[in-house]
Length: 127
Image (tube, rainbow, N blue to C red; front, side):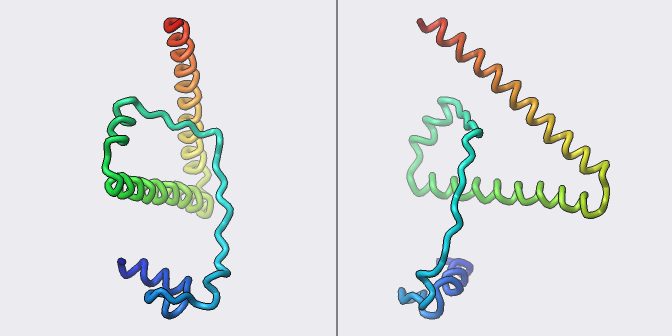
């Protein structure tokens, strides 16, 4: 176990947690409720799916953790940019960032519409 993991575990579970003994408040740790957004589509090509299916489990987990960490850092960075610009009163920058977010949302909607058209065409040709 890494030092950071040991520190977190000792903090959460109390002294002696590294040896397997749990602290008196270990059962009182309350995990936040996880909410899943249903409006997010994840589209992967067949090649990528086949590659993922052929990966060794330990490599798959390491890759998942790596990408999850990067996504967390990037989302925190975007939030920090918004917060900083709002705090400094730089509304032009906030509007510029919002325009970029809106542009991405529009592009995503256009891609989704195109995808639906392709799926309809695929069904039509397949039947």
